[in-house]
Amino acid sequence: MEFKYFSRNGDILPIEQAIVPLANIEYTYGFGVYESIRVANNVAYFVEDHIERLMESARIIGLEHPFSREMVSKSIAELLEKNEVETCNVKILLIGPSTSLRAGGQATLNILCLNPLFPDKKLYRDGVAVITYEYERAFPHAKTLNMLQSYLAYRKAKEAGAYDALLIDREGRITEGTRTNFFCISAGGGSSSGGKGKTLFSPDEKSILLGVTRKMALKVAAENGFEIVQKDIRLSNLSEYDGAFITSTSSKILPIRSVDDFHFGEQPPALKELMAAFDRFLDECKGAMK
Image (tube, rainbow, N blue to C red; front, side):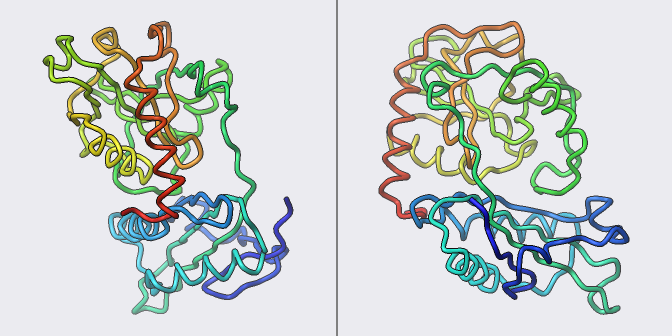
């Protein structure tokens, strides 16, 4: 679908004007933050949560701007109405000023609609292959435009025929994907779960982006009897778990079939249960966390 309009600093403009000057050194150097919001059947999902993280990302990297949460939310709604769109991804780009606001610096807020790229449905049945890549982001809790290493990792994954790359930190721990969050799962009774039943294992939250879909998946898991455990997860320990999955705005909960040369067995029933519960939650929540 072709989208005719975008939003800049709250003004709806023709998409032809959606340009960035070559002299914009803040964009060139990645001094900006961004968000992607899923819109399906006229429902924009978790707008408040995405805007909250946008503001937090800006705070973390010291990006000054005059935009309020209410203004960003209003701009998104106006853009969707103007484009008459039912399904898309909304991308928010907040680019920093070259000087402080007190010195006359001007931040720029661009919001545009993009055609979504959803995983093939068979991947939810069969799972995806992922690879590993040694890299850790400087500001784990900020979703910034400084994406070179993540881009290189993702490109390596695509060259290998994989869905994404899982990032490995300097201690050898799996942290997250280049555009996804990572979990392992145990169905209970094994040593990794302590015999406590269905358990999700997440890398330490201090070292990862706190994904909005991740947040919702944890909520659904807790409401469906899963225990949530934060712990170090290493490539050499994957055999301790019954399965693994990734989460993101576009992929929702997507099972992992293999990590490098390691292959999981049959998709555990507990993971299928969680995926079904999450889909029900998306259908019933009307785009807001309850």
